[in-house]
Image (cartoon, rainbow, N blue to C red; front, side, top):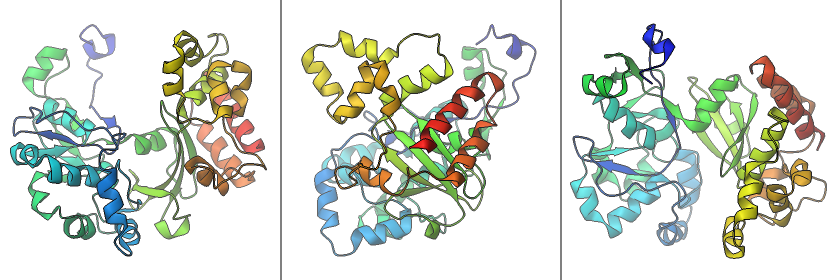
Length: 356
């Protein structure tokens, strides 16, 4: 970074961060970790979750407040697990962070959460305050002191500390913004900010489709919501555990001269047992796309014969991936925000997606 021509000419105006949602990062007052972080994919809280779901109407109340159905990945569930099984870690902690918030704290010394990350399972999405269901019904009221102040994604959240500037070569006192949840940052980056805009994220684990909406009542409650970076907006998320195969499809569309998908090469080098673990959560049709490039076009997995009751992915597909000119226009509108050299690939993806 110190050798960057742009930085040397003083073109760095500010720093913003985006990061994965959910999970738990506990630190002391100086930002030193209190035990290892817990990722969103950690399922250790599933038994406690099952106990909560046996309470009449609990999931309905939880969804009404937080915009998500109870899942082991929820930060609130992971805190509940820590409270039951590792209370000493909570007693030693001074702050609860999400991943990017801890990084920002180390950069600036200012402790804060942003509203988009906190909205994943901690906040009442209507008021922006901590959820009464989370605090009272999940028994987390005594942990409120761990939550730093909440900021809007574009709000100033301190400046780069002198020692960090010296270490990185970045200009001292550079402003740092609060930042946002990854799926919200992606929406902002591709221009999905208007009511009804639709966008797709090809991640390493999940394939997300998001619908921007002004009010949660307008969309299927079988999915989940997060607060958008745009004031007054939400994103209705349709997640599928099919991210890795789709990366190959996207790479082929954007960079046709790059050769076969990296995922395929990795798969072919794996031993049989490793292959089974790698592909355990994917259906046969999806796994073929990982190591057979000719099958990559099937990765979106929507057809007249899709059986929605078979899997979470199927349920997400039920009312979503039917052909719709409105969705096509929304995806095309997002494609127009992409630089020219990549726009054709995204347009092709949009076309293939909407033909299904």
